[in-house]
Length: 316
Image (cartoon, rainbow, N blue to C red):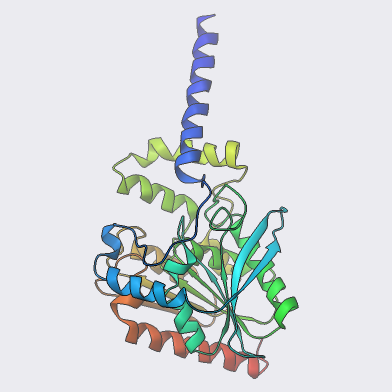
């Protein structure tokens, strides 16, 4: 009988620990969109906080049209469409973990528009106006990427399309790279991606001073039991081994959240004939553009030109 009680108590502790892991890592309460000038107080933004506030204020005034899709599992996802001109190439932007597209892409949106793209800026599932409460670190979100591409092709025409993400969004677009994408997807831009959901969870544990070997199993079970997904189902490293879509990766060498070595790992695993990695000295997480916008824009423009030229020459 004692062993039965021990078994019951142990099971309850595992379930409670897994529930805590789910709520800590994967659950997202209803989020409101970032308001004018709102930037977190974290060290990440210290060197660019005022500039980011200015950019948020500017992009908040840009005209857009709200768009929405039904995800593969039935939830409604929302986004904003910014129009440059008829027949322009399309860029679809995917923000980071518990982030805001307006903050994460206050520079990237302007860069895309300046480069002549029409743009869809997405609220990822469980963020902003999109439905859902579970963040799966790209496991489910990668299918949302495909759904947004199909929507854009149907709604605006099958023009050359570049998928762009930052942080979790970067890993998401990379994880989507081995799905059967329409031929007009000509490039992927990933800013500070993590190599796999499991590795970034372990890294989060280290950053918080927690032992990954103890904590990670509870996170894994929390994702499985309460989130309904398998945390190691795929990864950015696995996906890029099975794609020939051109890939451009940016990463700050002083990234305090996602180590730069993760982008190096993805780059080394990538089998695309056209792959590029640019690192930025002194840049923290997601701050490469703010740290050296001239270098960033130069690499971005070269990559976009390569992608558009390829599809124009019927290489894809």
